[in-house]
Length: 166
Image (cartoon, rainbow, N blue to C red; front, side):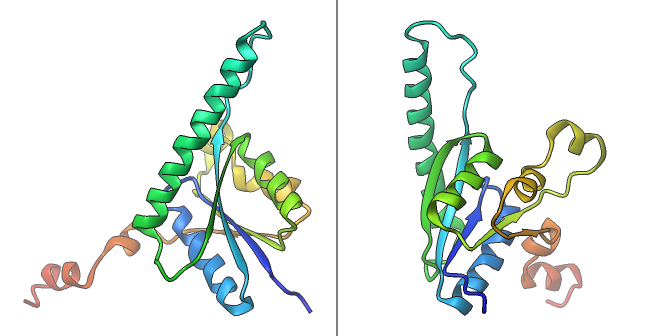
């Protein structure tokens, strides 16, 4: 039998990632899982290997992680139900590699991440973190394609107004 004791859900702090949170929380309730919410801050590559530059890069990354944690906590407070208990984590690095590393180190049973649904040239130019995680990870990965934003933001009041029901 499969037990999902530790579930990793990733976020780029966009509304797209809320679809992944929804799926992960459903599995989390079903299996009484620990939910980790991971945000990866893209790190800058140390281009110059000069004395003293490494410490600047390290300071920049530390500051980026601190700022990322504030943004993640704000995202959780504003966008995720208080009933849902998540463990917020912020790391710096290449997103797909950091997701893989974190999953392996923490013994994650399932990774859940949302896709942005990019196709064509945008997909070629920007790549896909989800695609790379699926290729790199030894942990099962569930990719979630979010509902269109229109469905997610339409309220009952909007429909009633549009149909002139009031």
